[in-house]
Length: 639
Image (cartoon, rainbow, N blue to C red; front, side, top):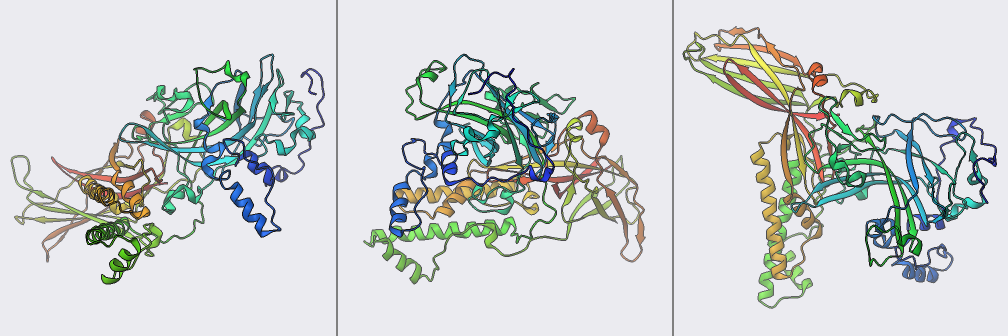
């Protein structure tokens, strides 16, 4: 039995002679795995014993008997949102630290403004304390690192998807870890007199419990996060926007301080909103979560905030979160991928939509003449017309064509006519040249930027090839050009999964062309839906989901002001007497306007794509000559 903290019952803390031995991977036993991760929400199925692998008949019967209990839709951890939620009166506080925590060694609290990157370790501990005069029983304590992405549906409902859930099995409580029989869990940390584990499944009065945790931020999420298995959707995205439902629905009150470029509450665990020009209700949110789960007991009823007739076996006692920010980082040796263009992906999807409509039309005709058996219809449709029955795989990786241009060029021209203000008459052609996409360095407001140790990207160089043709053989080309580079953020979202990845060619289209493409696929989706309901036909699942996701997509462009320096260029023209043309070449470097970014702090988050949203960029080059202006768009990627 534990005693009060003023009695020294601590054991000798372990010696850390080799720091490499302090990070240990835990492989859960069968019982631990089922108790912590696969526990059914009704808690009636017996999942304590592993299957018998000696007799095949036993295996078959075991699989059948456990089929329902091992259905992920019945798992407790997948149904936490359905549980009765209360806020039990005990303390649960998460602290992030700079280094791996060790017993008896003072810790340094992590800077709440710190920004992590994939591959970094997140260290910390959770402190539990019951100030009441009665013990609080519980079933499970789960310590996890999580990432949610979210957007909003047309009816205003926030659609949230969890793409990272990593549990620290050592920090979480499990009855099969034999905490009560392990001397480590009776140990007092001599530094603060906190116990390092739970002796029983209860939180005793005035007995502080401390659980150390550690997580590594992954470079990639698991492939089941993307139904279409798109490589770009599996990269860990950066923090983005704000989940207004976080911090117990108080995050909506956060405002950006224009002098700082971000906003947050005073407590270290607060979510943060930065000036990243995210569309409303779009977010990518990272946090450490500590969840206390209990069984249905009369003890909890007095803490209900509202009456309930909820039928449950478990109850959500408390959930605390500690938010932190992450920026993107691609491994140095990223595997080579075969990439298809967005245009190719869309053409593949359109062909499959057209074929699905044709097949359903023919099925309707066969039904009218009395051929109703599905197998007989298939034989007629796919043999008489010579159609090959497809698997309807619309993933980008199904097209083995590498799409990676080495040089991007874009030409624009402007015409001049003599008037009262100008004696210049002729046509100026400008060709912009850039190697692949313009690669830009991501940045955050200054106070947040200091915590990042990312390698700097060399500012990109853009070549301008100028050609002036005089219409009267007397006009001289312009002597001064003002060039204003601007960043345009491109956001695509769908409250259903986006079935394709978007490349520079797609982003560089005019807004009207993009919205026209989305509308076209929305029409395909509506037509298939109508035909399926009218004729009671089955639409190929992958085609249906792909059309639904693309048909509900939304496209938005946002101008991000005061990012680059402006340039006044004086071209050195050379006259070609043969072609009667003036030619000049200009090379300029896209440098950030550091003074503007300090006075008006903002964030340029890395480019990313997920199933629900994509943040991409392009650079608009505005060329001003006297009172005329022309604009051209260049592809850009922020890293």
